[in-house]
Length: 442
Image (cartoon, rainbow, N blue to C red):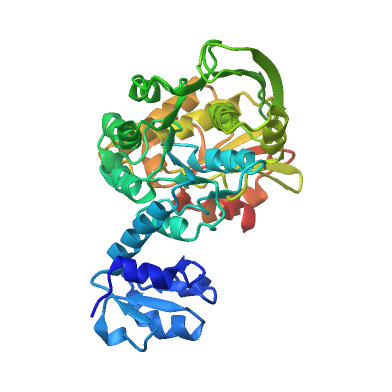
């Protein structure tokens, strides 16, 4: 006999969170035996119980080993339904749904850092931002959470809408809309429509929206939200700022209206000196400031939180190795983020700059065009000392003067002996699957 979600929830309340992976299972967890194309979580049920799982949720009767095993029709559906049920019990938690083509994780971390100065804050761990990660995030949220940042990723239409039904955000922020996951969305219009599913959900709740007015597509999606908190460079936005320094790291002076209504009230200038590389982080920082203002975080605490944040995990991460300085921005890449990174790097005032660019994935039939566009950008900016990695760039480079390798391993071997790579500033930018970090770690 299978249990209802309400009955499973009673067991969940006696556990200390959930996991779908025995490799990171903690004693007292509720284990969900998910299935994939190359694995069957049911087969790890005994291992989970032996490691101290309080319960194991399975969808195969053959793996109901004892009274700690809960049989359901489908473990993924059960996980999502349990998370939805749990979220409904958290009536006083402010939940920000956050999506976008670029900068989601950096923006999430900045916002969480700012909010945590005054509120018990919980944010998506790592990249747990899909149909599995969002439910896991909600179910692992501490009971005393006052504010949560739930990152939502998608590569097909309808996924953001589904995640909204699970997470039930009452606030929303879209970082930007660019050429990401074109293989699943078809074109930039498809990306815009998919990301807009978050605003559609919030509109039905009359919730709070934060608008990046520097992105024309985001601004268009949020045009009809009368109480939106907008941010950008124009002086009439609720939060506005100007860049005062771009290199070596981003600094800006920002102004925020003290009145909730966007174009009224006193504005006070405040300076923040970040540890973030690249002008493309400008709106990510502004998003965190806007959330901080909305959550009544004092300006000085907003500044401290942002200035103390240091990027990690291959996201605009600065690494000094020997005489060289690396900007490791190789967690992900798409045409929009690649162009922004290249333009920002071109503005760096350094006598020995090198670009190492890896293929961009999930572009479908746009791959050839978009890689060719990047080559054209390199020509226009007259950038030298370029190393291209991957088959797509190999096909697109034509007669462009550069070094080319099919893999990061091959590029790393060449770079070890390249005579000009001393006292250099080196940007590593490419999709995660290109493993450009190998160039540093090998």
